[in-house]
Structure formats: C-alpha cells, structure tokens
Image (cartoon, rainbow, N blue to C red; front, side, top):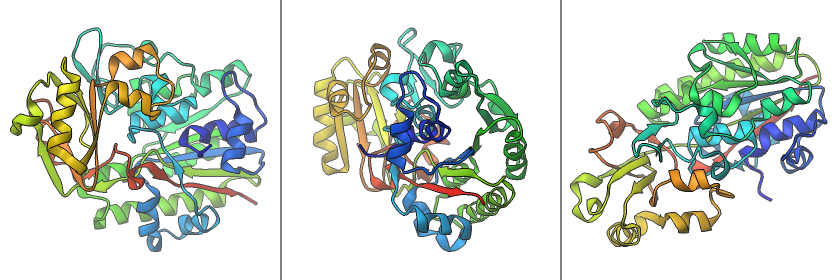
Length: 368
C-alpha cells in the first residue's frame, strides 16, 4: 500500500510498540520504514509539499539533509486540504470515515455551509467527527500525546476533531513551540508540533514568493535547533498536510451560465469545488463539457466509487457535494455568490489531485 499521511502518527505509535484499536500501527511503521527510537516528535508543516520543498532546498540546509535520506514522498488524503489531512493524521483515518472532507461542507441539519477550519457553527466537533482520535486511544492505553500549537487552536473545532484527548502545549512563535516540544519530552515520549505560517504565507503571497522562502528559512532553523537539543534516541518526523500551486487562472461559477445552472450551493475550495444540487447528473455533464480537460468532474457516487475518500460513512455521504470538480493545471474554480472577494484572491491553492498538492515529505532522523 502507498504510504499516506494517515500512517505517520499511527506509525510513530508503532515505533513505541503500542497497539491501538482499529489501527495497525506496526503496518504503518513498516510502510513508512520508520526506525526504532525511545521517543518521537511528529512535526506537521502546513503547506510544505514535496515539490515545493525540493524546488527550494538551497534555502533549507537541515531539511535538505533529511530529504537526501528520505527522498521519496508519501501521499496525503483527498481532498488535499488541511482539515481533511490533519484529522487523517490525528485519527489514522481517511476523510470518508471522519466527515472532514473539505475546507467547507454543507451541514445536513441546516442546509447551510460551515468552515471546517474556523468551525463557524454551533455543531460540536465530537458530534461531527465521531471516530476516536489516536490521542484518545492512547489515553485508554495509559499513554499521552502532547499537542504543541498556538493558544487560539486549543479547544477549536478542528483541534477537537483531530486531537481531542491530547495534552495541550501552547507555543506562539516557532521558538516557543520547539521549547514546548522539548519540555514535553520530559513527561511523555510522543509529541506533535504544528507549524502553519508557511501555508499562511503561501496563500497570501504564493509559494514562489520571497516571503515564502523567508518562512522556509525560519522553519529550517527552528527544526535544526529541535534536532540539536532533543534527547538522544528521539525520532523526529517532519511531514505536511498538502502541497500548493500558485493559481494562474480563475473561473467564477456565478459568471458562467453553463456552470451556474442548477447549482444550489458551492463549498469545498477552488481546487476541489463541491457543488450541491438536485440535478447532479445534469450539472456534472454541463461542467464536463465546459471545463474539458481543465478539471476532473465526479458526481457524488462516482467520487465515492473512486476510493479517494476511503470507506465512506453515512454522515460523510450526506455532507459532501453532489458534484465535485478537481482542477488541473493552475486553475481555481470558485463562486462569488458563496465566497468572499478575499477568498477568491488567494494566490496559493490546494485541494486537488495533482502530485504537487498530494505528495508531501516524510523526513526522518533519530538523534544521537
């Protein structure tokens, strides 16, 4: 089986020789080729695609050395987006099981969209993402996962979906988070550290910008310090939730009658556009004719049958779009009726099935 981001934390648990209900942690460890160690730090760098990193390794000496030893990428989940992938990392499950299948989705109770990052709904994350997290299962096994991230994420919907059961460790700057991860190793042998600033810069400035390079250099220095100061026999795994492309063409569904006809609601994101409609076959047909080879268009049933979501629960089936369009090339497909002008001006995008978005690094080091 292809190694996935869903294997990373599960594999880290396998390194510590711990089995968990419903997950084959030893198999995840083997798929990733993880070495044995006494303790593990998993670093998730939001937006650091394998292609993005390999194009800029001259600015990241620590990551370059790790990449030389781990040159092959792993695959993220689909849609290749933060909520889906981080929950996949935190549960070991694909989005079809967690219902975290996009940047935004329609709430089947209300018919209204909600954002799985900002969680702008009164719906409890525990009632939406009902599968146990790895952190919860570790608690049952008498172990603890320390979750290092900014204060604003503690108790958020996405955090509760992916990391409930973990012990929060707050760190605002990269130095704070490195210090927090190192301190956490004095009380537990498994730590997760999140860094999102690279993704934020990529969205706003593009991943090919000087600002993105500056963030990569900052990140590289922080990870090098983490490596230097971690105790001996610590396995450090650096991975990502998705890669990124810089958009060069945009289509506004609202301005194209062939795309707008029959559409009740648009959610998802511009690279994985989810359409809610009572006319799925007709809408999918019009979209295929208009977009041609610029996008892969599925009906909901075709999307489920493709296996991209993994095994699909009834809840996920009811929440995902009736039609989904995965953009090719540098195309973004949005809708000004449902998306803000700010959202439609983002430069760096992800969510689709291209290698640039789906391939992420899995870099490993055992400290000495």
